[in-house]
Image (cartoon, rainbow, N blue to C red; front, side, top):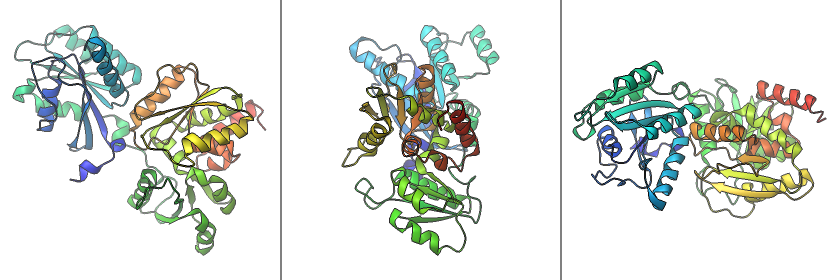
Length: 416
């Protein structure tokens, strides 16, 4: 079915959290009407997070995630808890599951963690046939505008109310998700997409940011012309009307900059996704922290997906090379992939993230928050490439707020 093919990064992530054996798996099975998780009376049955994609109408495609008990014990238990905490960082709606009548430090810690991340929370008091939730607690939840519901998950009681609670808890930025490019290219206008076909291009298909950008143009009645970098100049000369925007793979920035007249706006897929998935303004500030790098400084490269690097890999070869040339000395680079992201960032002077096309926005915002709290600047591939190649202003030309921030910081720091 089509919803099974929807990219995870476009789904609403709903995570189930709580102690062992409170009924998280039963709740997941009841809401999905399937046996997505193994249910047992033995505590700790759920080990690694269990993911179940489905349609939750009228929201659309969602990803339910069942996690190990937050009170798991022992060496193996601590690893399970670590995995659970990783899920917390990418959760759009955090569902705290507790047995009715039982609420303690574990639940309070979860609630505090979600509040610190700015994550929407719903509370489920399960096994309510055996006990009732504490009235003082429910009054406190009501006062904090935290929705709660009582269920008996293994009997499917309260599941319709739980479904409605999830719908009512949906974050505004998911319901009113920003476009990738349609606000920059209006109906009937043309965007030229420059798509290099090199060794790292997936055989027979385009990479996800390119596909999603094309779809965004089509959804909003705009026109997209897709060319390789060698055909860009000819394509521009063949058009009767100027395109509104040229979008390039960041690796081809210099050639595309040279072949695109300066009265045509230009940026990259990666920069568009910095705006879509994260916070463009804070990542612009992060890119300008390149000016403070010195030989020997440590830089973290963070990739959203795991892949086998080949040849001139952008994160492991090209960006380190361009930054080393810009700084004028060797830097130390460390690379992480997938959901692995170090909590101790104190040894790094800069974090450079990929476009995060395989992540949901919540996980990227969580990482930006970790960086901000650690006072470590964070930027992304496209922004740092444009900065190190000396075309930062050009790459920010479609984004007035970002361009204004750059000019203000440039003036204050006397970078010219």
